Length: 519
Image (cartoon, rainbow, N blue to C red; front, side, top):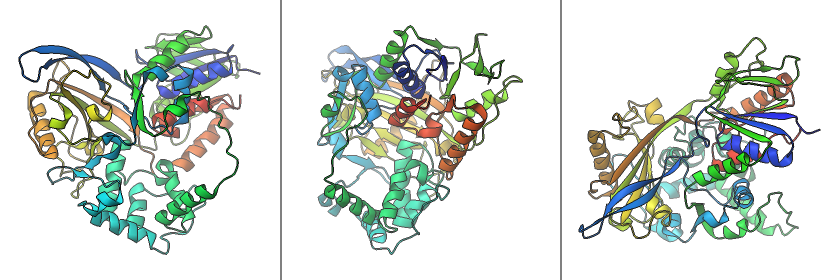
């Protein structure tokens, strides 16, 4: 029997995906989506701003509308749940794709703390031969590939360790700090020494098992097994239409108006359905069992009372924990591990410079900054995690006739939690102080090896506690939490979201797609 009324807490991508898919599965079920902010989409934030751009000769000035992203900006074609939304929401005409042969796909860089300039990460054997990073990479590969196995095969989900410990054990400490910490900065804005390998990179454990303790041997064995597998290919369950074909040979993709287009399309779809109600600026303040002991009772900030038969929470786990502890006498039983994981806060600085990208930085996607040898307390002037070369990463997103270079700098994460750094001071109008801008430009100039010109625009946002860090043991803790939900809250409730299922856009959309399958 279909649910009578589903309440969804949280209007980020997970909540939006939940509402969209539940409404398709149960078109006559009442759905109420609650979001305490006045906007939907969570950390997805895309906006166009007007920038006054001088001509290359400086003789005239024109206004260009430039797209700024302060959240996720590009998506990988492997996330089929997102491609399905592109198809179902008719977003294919807005797609912007970047082929694997583009400079943004081929060129990615590192900036080593304490050293000037950028180092290109080798993407081929030929580039490896001349790379300053070759000694670290070659030693790492040989250490793992020719080892007799650094640990016994794992079976129990309770067996876990940090990503840094795993990489150090297989490839050595220098590799783990140089490449591993940089990768984690780019994905989680976290310290690799805190991040669970089982939660973040389960395929690495599969390679380790397949290779008898060696990741490299496991990767080779897995690739060979795939080549030999000539069995019948099973059709997927995703409704991809022709979108999957558009992704052939592509590295990443986005949309003409940024990832915010995905949020806007989901919101339009939901608001066009009579069975769906979207309440913005009115989050839940109380959550408990219904008066009769059946279903749930939710009170919102505006005083509205809802009595849904089914419940989906896509709230950040600490926010759900606070809600449970502030609820009435009929409050739902507390859940374990909701505050077990830390979170990272990230400052995002969008900068628009005059002149084409070729005059300011090498062609490529951008660069990451590894953990300093002196740890997060020092060795990095402003706590920079990395910089995206937006104008090269998605060159067709801004007006082609505007001679500008757009970059995005990410700061914070473990520098805020472990180091002596704090989010940058912001003036009353929401802009960075001139002194901080000067320091930031000086640091970027040192990274890029050239003096940067005065920017046309600088925009800053600090996202507090925006990315959860699943620490070792996360997978087992989440399994226990879900068991308690089933036993104490009932089969009509589910807890999902970035702190449960994964922080990427595809993971959030997939969680919403599969929620409530047992209803």
